[in-house]
Image 1 (spheres, rainbow, N blue to C red):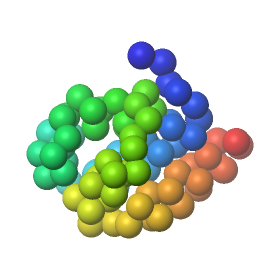
Image 2 (spheres, one colour):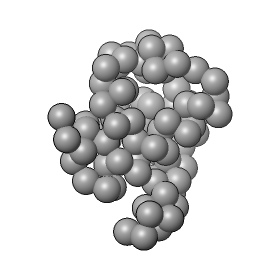
Image 3 (tube, helix red, strand yellow):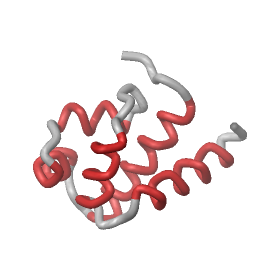
Image 4 (cartoon, one colour):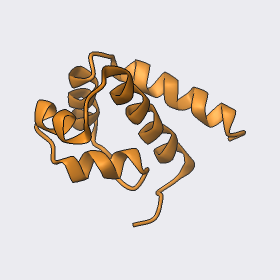
Length: 82
């Protein structure tokens, strides 16, 4: 599945970064927030368009706010020149 947009890819990178800081696998994150590992993987690759509900679940499981994830995604987009 192709990347949906640079914004989706940046959000996915923000999730991946937060997950890495927390030191958890995609499988563990998925389990913690009630989502499948493949769904988490798709988000991190920028292929999935997560609903607000799922963004909030992921943020809570990563012990960050949804605003933190979006701010990190904005920073990533700016670094990419977008």
